Length: 179
Image 1 (spheres, helix red, strand yellow):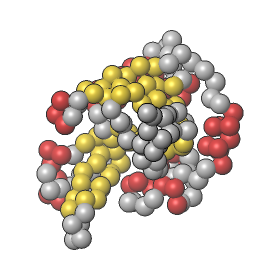
Image 2 (cartoon, rainbow, N blue to C red):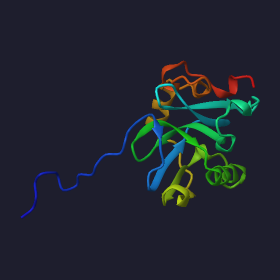
Image 3 (spheres, rainbow, N blue to C red):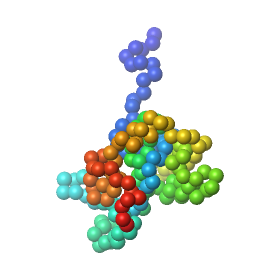
Image 4 (cartoon, rainbow, N blue to C red):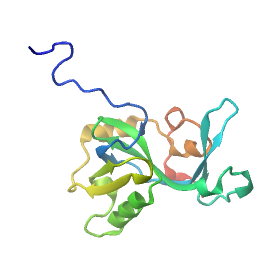
């Protein structure tokens, strides 16, 4: 007898927030914006939560204000199309192995800008045993509907530096911001 409690094809949905978090297995996305670059560390707030503090690469870090200087990470943040969830999100990459591969692809004349093809990041393992592999898909034009949605979406990546919500501020082209 087949259990009809749930549809046969049913799977528990992934969290669909405004930020892409790498899940176990393949994570496919298309980069839509150039990344903003900086340093990030976390502080404990008075209400017991953790809050990220982000500084531009050009800003000096006051190491005396950082709870654990060994925890400061270099980050890239960019707008992406999450191909799996069919959603525009922000992806923050702190993993140096992923940054190195994306930088290598961008510098390679045969691949060029990672905005021209989908990227698949495969995540395996947990905590200190976590490993990532990065694979570029063949170059394809960005879907016209995705391009239209991105153009109409209001996202200000620079808001990450002030702790504001990038989805609730004016859209800013990072190329227009003086460093």
